[in-house]
Image (cartoon, rainbow, N blue to C red; front, side):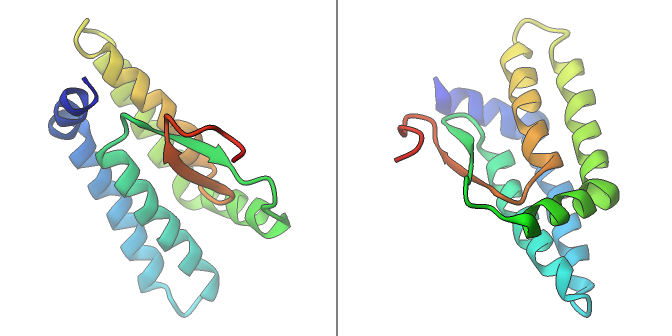
Length: 132
């Protein structure tokens, strides 16, 4: 079932949202003169991979993420995060209008937290026991 949902997801919205994250990542890497944007580019490409194939994976907070990730997340929200989260919110609401699209819309809502706060989290398989 995960594979089927991932394939439908990829066609309807995953590919397009992954392109958005890749563009943001390229912008962050293009601004490499500001050393601070490099972690944003890495996080953006990591999220792009998650957005391509979200079913069967989930987000886990890293408890030892420090103040730097907090400051980075604030900067990310201001410049990129709110636009990407808004894209997931609108896409999720549109997908929830149909019965077939409800699981896909819920997956969009699942991605909103990492699109807002990408630093200090990791993407893990869903069947993995958290904290181990």
